[in-house]
Image 1 (cartoon, rainbow, N blue to C red):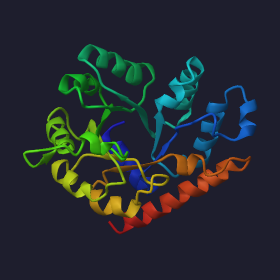
Image 2 (cartoon, one colour):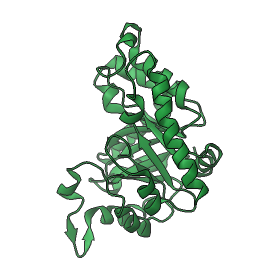
Image 3 (cartoon, rainbow, N blue to C red):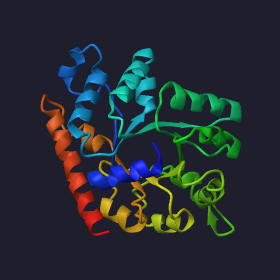
Length: 269
């Protein structure tokens, strides 16, 4: 998917919501366990209930990989079921030496046909560049994450510059805003102002709204640009809103709350 198609989706749906299908078989409604593929059935029902309210789905690959071949099959089936207008994210956090990264890129972009993949930048340019050679595919680079451990390295400061700022400044030379996004956690919204000075036009994937306590209004205040430039991810707060036979309605209700708030924020933009 190219940048303009993504922006058009946001404007037409009045939403920049990304729903994380981080599907844990121990948390899905018990009645689904009798299904031949309970993970896919759960995802299918969530997609059916929410696809008109969001512009993207993010699959955290760890939840599928942990189940072996059945998990990979459920992930592929889910990806194929997602409507084509949706922006799809493989949240795989890959990144290795060049020839290995090239194989990871082939796996997620050619074999599985995701629109994007999350990539860790620690090993530098040659570990990221192979992902950037695919047309209309995106790298979503980890920049400033929402977890507590982000303090261990990302706020290391040298010459008045945080390490996450160094990542942004260096990596933006590797690609452009048609192929490179950044992960920035919603739990640190004030940092978005500094981030926007470095990457003013890039899209940001923002986890942490919902179960992790991030504020949508705060993220938009500091992070929204003239093209919106945000994909706000919510996973647990939506997909586990209910755990009985009416779970999909509860999930839709939660997604709708976020979409309505987004619509208001866009109208005030």
